[in-house]
Length: 467
Image (tube, rainbow, N blue to C red; front, side):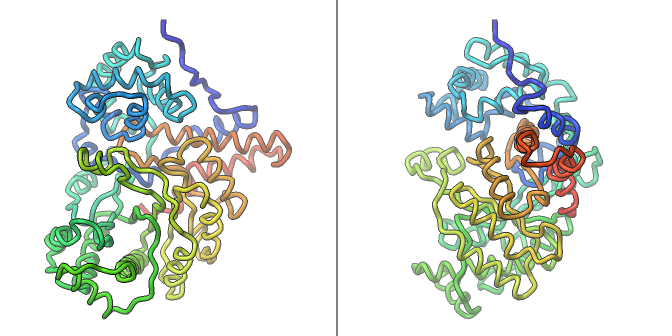
């Protein structure tokens, strides 16, 4: 017989204060998931997934990396094995993920969505696969139903500037109780050193109806797409960069760099940095003009395994934490925008835990009193969205800023089953505060501390974003 799961009502809550904070102030708060990679076409069509592998294993780099570590053949990960075989392979791996956050997330998600209160393993994987699949065919477990189960208020997907947003347009006409917005992700227009850059500009030009033959044309095309996104309800952007570039430039220099690239000449490091600085600066000034929030996810070292990149393509589980320099260029970039009073509300996300203090202290340099929490140190993401990463981010922010102004968690996920990550975060948050209430480091004042918990869980994000 399978053993019962350990996901109890007081999972991760270690004392009475933590329990009260979570159950009375955090658990019932709606979810604003302001950054994810959910496919809007599936929400628009309100898809019912055929099986759990399609909604739970497809695209999940976390699970893929664990399976590879356990010696699972790629056939059962991204290969041509059946969906049932892939799930059964994952089930066999789950017991080996003890102390990895996957063990927590796996059982939290099975219980919250499907009421399965068993420990997943190789012996019961087939039975659980069939049980979940039967539930997924029920109308209440469609994409929208799965979101509603988790009390999602608002979610924000992520689209390239070339996207025509037809699915978001459809969703805007269909009031089903959850606000679905989008974020503008123009990284491909910045990365002049990336393969396929000029081909991408051709696509961007078609979307914007601009012939991009120079630097000014590129700016014009990006502005038109920002205007288009804004007309379709977009109020955020997102950037996934190694680090922020900052190199002094003149427009004439950038135009010459662009021409050099078009002519097939090799660019110097300084030229690449000048171009990236110019485009990112232009974008940020435009975001400020439109009243958007800008997000920067910094620090990932991507595509490390070139053999597997060639075989499977990008975003298949071969990325890790980078050790890029962050502080000086972040400072210069924000200062250049602030000096022109063109610094938008900004969220910076750090992937290297060694840099937490850098990010937590940096935001205080540009919180100018104009907006509560204008510059945010974003939640732990990717490799840091587990218990230790969450606590380290919260501690750094508490020590060097005001955690009471923090806008809380997001999923950054491609899966409709990832929303218990908000519960996981809230439990960790409440336990952290509850421990300090018990030790006497925080006052025994549930109303005072509970308000901070409710604000971090929901209210601060509700106030910060204009959806």
